Amino acid sequence: MEDARETCSQSGPWQLTCIGQESAKLPAVFQKATSASSTQVEENPDRFEDLQSSTQLSSVPDPTSRAPAGKASALSATAGSRFGYYMTETYWNSSALTAPTFRAGLRMASPPGKGATAYPGESRQGAEGFGRNFGDAFASRVGAHTAQFLTGAMTREALYYAPSANRGFFARSAHSLAFTFIDRSDSGWPMPAISNIAGAATGGFVGDLYLPAGFRDVTHAGQRATFQLGTFAAGNLFREFAPKIPLPLRLVISLISR
Image (cartoon, rainbow, N blue to C red; front, side, top):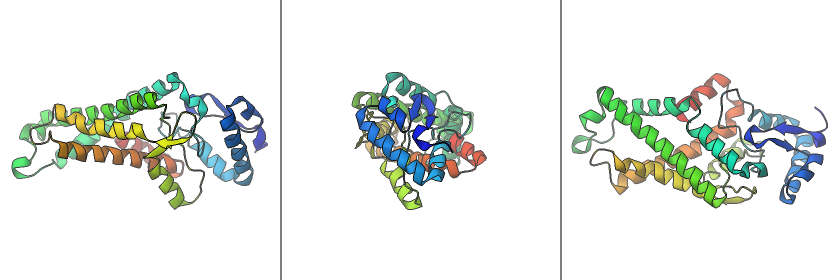
């Protein structure tokens, strides 16, 4: 490996992020972070390569292509990169169709409610039922991602996940779950994950516009919002450990749950 102080890496949509001498090109608040990263590279080259691999998982757009350990890149703050990330995550990937399809299949296999409060037949049987459930899953997904994007733009909140600089399993797991509630601003500092809360609420309450009677109430919407927030947490956990997951399995998980 070349001298870590002169190492530069291409990191997804952020253009070029450099360690060491090139850190002079970044804002002052990031010069300290890149200096610390240089020390980590010298002490733990294996961990550095592991983090690098999270941005090079495959040629398929992947949600693991995010920030260097511990900080969200200052270069992710541009409106163009934020909008591009939103479009890629929401529409320009195969899971935009496969994930709602998988969720619709699960809903039909195990419809919610029982007895008088069960899903009506047209929502759980045949092509019509599949179409209704697919539409619900697609609308919830798009609503959640759109609310995340708009809220992040207003609060200057970075949409990218920043992997942990730790090597321990429990520390990395705790970091990924905590990131659901405390993420990073565009300038790289910790802040409340307002966009995640807004996204979860939107994904949960959008169903009130079209779901069958008995499922358009605050209780059911709150349950759907809680589930949506849980998917954000699970997504962070997946992104944290994705470099260690075999590529075929990693792609399958992305297609059904991204």
